[in-house]
Image (tube, rainbow, N blue to C red; front, side, top):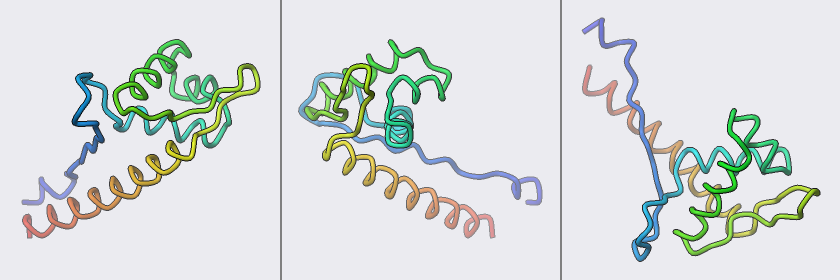
Length: 114
C-alpha cells in the first residue's frame, strides 16, 4: 500500500443550467478566470495570467453567461471588468463547494486505503 501513499483524488465540480441546450458549464476554468478578474479588475489581465488569449477568455465568459442565463461580469471597456453580484455569489459558492468536496474526497481516500 505504500505505493498508494502519494496518490490524491481530484474532484471536478461543474455547475450547469439544466434548461440550457448549451454544453457550457461553470467549472474550474471559468472559476479561475473569475478569480483573476476579482483580483486584477481585468478580464484581459486574468486571461494573460492563465496564459490564455483575451479573445478566448471573452468567448468562454460569453458562452457560460448564455448557458447559465446570468451575467457574470460587468465590463467597462478599457477600464476593466468586475464580477456582478450574481457572479460573485456563484464564484463564492463554487469555491466553497469545491474545497469541501476535495477535503471530503481526500479524507475518504485515506480512510479506504487505511
